[in-house]
Length: 310
Length: 323
Image (cartoon, rainbow over all chains, first blue to last red; front, side, top):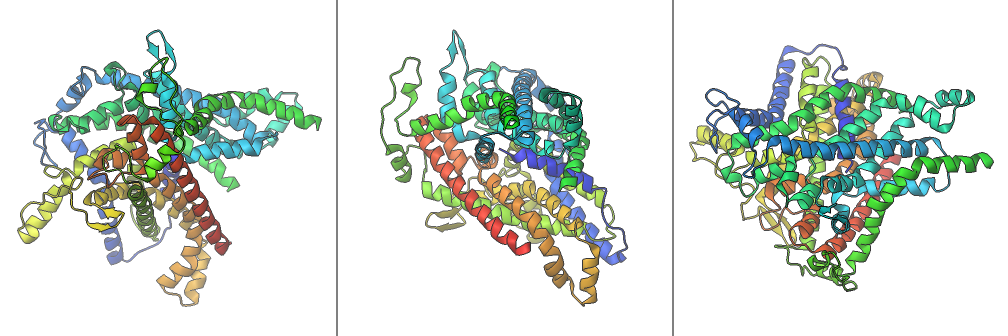
């Protein structure tokens, strides 16, 4: 459940580390051997990505591509999956839109609600603080599917006319928020802990209320962690599979990206040309990778502050 | 005192939205789950206005322990043993590879260090579901990249026929000792997860390596220490406190890793690569055994709780060694 958190934090740390490293000289022979080792590692890391990219560009669009360098290159596979990724009559745009709706709901809910709670845990002393923090930590330890059966049963009970909460995008978003919110609280709290208290005290002396200091002092300073937490919420929704597959399977119009992906590798795999599967995988992964790299700077600035406190 | 109670009131104002939401969608379902686990909640109870399920006591728990469930190839002990071995073997390999690569990249005078670090982190930013589906594709017996590469190598070196090993479905296990069964699919999953997992360990290790003061190495050199002695007496004591918490975290994450097992091997062959999380998922999504799934989730909760306590204790025990 906490995987993306530590992951992104460390990924950004890695990028920060690319700027450090000792200077010095190596004998030519040793340098050569080390370079060969590093290149070999880079090849293993890059190979699956290059392979998938090559397959997605295979102009022959055959079911079973057989070479890393297909003759020529085309975007046929991309055009095909954008029009209709699976055997079901549902377009990529529809799938992406459904995933985006879930992603935005999770992201918005977990960050706004989480920021308030994180502030209380970070700055205020109150009765029950320890118990509540332990409760939230305990939930963090659980896998996302820890409450699968009860959520399935409970959400299904909400029926308004033809609308059933469980078979709606909103229901999926609720179920995922259950595991995303504790993470948001914990992540934001960790960052708020590193903001010096003096800044708030100055505001309090000027007569600002708790809520005003939160809104005018803390929130602007916490922008990096809010952006990053929102991004994690978004990824959780964008690639969500477990609840969507369980809740939305009956209505192809509510299908999400990962459900279509599952269809492509599942029982129909033999009938799905691999170039289309590859194109689809890239279309799903690329936005995440781009935003990741774009957000690096934010994540690093969060880390830099966190680093002072150790 | 007045200040404190006013603070408490403000605090609960800030906490109210979170507490409300978590009470409804997190804590209530978890409590509801305990009740469900003592009933025979099934498909018939889902309907609107359906009669309440019957109370069956500990029957669901008993059925899980007796492997008396209609899930194909269900064997609780085998799944648990495999799940533990899966997490442990992964974490150890991630740790060793991560530290090794960090050490290489930390060698003074290495050129293109920045480029390598930027490349090595790439697997981390790909969504896990994509990693899992792509690796399933790579392990395809006939057209997957892995077998094509192996065929290329054995073909050139030994003039051997093409490799057509069905990694994910090969029915004969490599190892079978009572409930401990390792099918070929395990190694395919391991390969994918090592690809995915070592880079982050390497990042943590790099951070720790860079915090080591250089004069410690110089002092060790003056004492005539070789590279192994320097590694043991200077590097390792600095690595341990940084790596250990991450290894514990990685263990729990890998223990609960849904995507690789579900999408690559589908738990196969014969359910031998099924994990607790994928089993829990199948109980609901395929078998509609909601009550059994609830009991299973509670078993899982206590197993995770036990693992967290054990790993924390281990962490503390070794931490005091360094401090």
